[in-house]
Image (cartoon, helix red, strand yellow):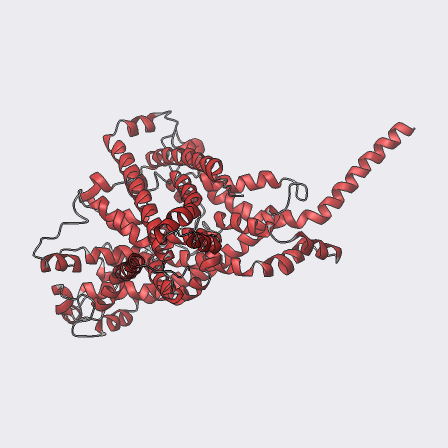
Length: 314
Length: 294
């Protein structure tokens, strides 16, 4: 029976092929399993927060048995004027930090690039990168001391015969303080990517331009700036994904109830309402709102980065 | 740089150098100031007279903190989480990145798996379910709560995967002809060739573990289980000095809370300052690895 014979042969051929494939590649699956398990438990399993947001979650019942409430949690969130305030605060703080940091970083990178002596440049970089490696608890602890009424900043103001503003206690000054201290922490480290882009600029371009009589400023304008333009565009695109990331660590270490009006953000609100007051479903619902918004923003950001700067993460 | 220097150009150089020196000094000032406060005596620091130099130099602040020993407990928790957590980070990064660096033909399912990994970076359940999951696993108040939830650093996996893909194919093919398994190839070809990049990532993971404080604050209900940065937060931000020192009348007479806090801050950053020069050596590799991090 030739037909059945060839079918058997085909099947046994496929079995042999599969066995052969697995004999070579089973280690790849085995290697991937631990990472997959970690992701499943700590990244994918917590996505049941999506379900919680539509329930009146009771830890004793779990998310299978907890009663459903439909859109009740979202209704109470959207009816709360605080919510619009924290969304606005998150957006304002994040955007102010992103824009100022990028401008400062580009400017600092251009200035560092004009330093000729390598040892001097390296010494500056050592100092400027350091704050990036310290936690916000350390930086916040230092700032709380320096900006207190008996701190060194108040001392400086007194020396000038002025009265120091309450940087961390007034709604006028809290956000500017966040912006400036954010620059302190991150500006050095943020210059790295621009300096890297500048090392890729061919030095012969500068020499040729100098021979043609281009002055220093002209060379900066026509050689250096175009050399980092694509990096600037790329980071601007990617940063768009972060316009709701106001920075929990920084805000949480520096804020206090006196500045909730300008300083309270989505993450700190979720922490206080969800964890401290243990209103799990409400916290999960606000968390879901932020996750969805964040997802949309990041996907948009990567799309733009791909479109305008040809960037993709893999 | 190009030789010719006119008047304006020289003036710019001077102004630029002066500005950069002042800017760097301003960035460094807070650290110097803390150092000065931590070595100043009670009257000077309480009165707020210290700037960049200690007034009436004393080591009493440090002595009291080390005598009280509460800081050792917290430091030990931090050491445990940093060593175990970083090793686990490194192991899982390598193991997860290697199969993902293969083509979809060589490893069936690769494209689905890579999306599973990437998606987890873009979307999460949020703080509340994250906390509830860790609690339901019984990890609260154990050091594992500080190690396991962040065991797989997804961004590092992506970077390592990209790095592995740039490894020349010939190296791997030669190893296959010699009959090497994927385990062997990963260990003998990919890991050695990526050692500098893996070293940077490891240092960054270690710094991240050392600096973490939020997980300790949320996942530990007893202050004796706090890692150092969480402990520091209690002392410095919530101003709970009794956690650090037994404030008897003699101690209160000798040291000020400001100096004690400054000293605690500096003690907690010593490990960072020790690894900093090593991190710095790899800044150039760091450019490729970390700078575009979102």
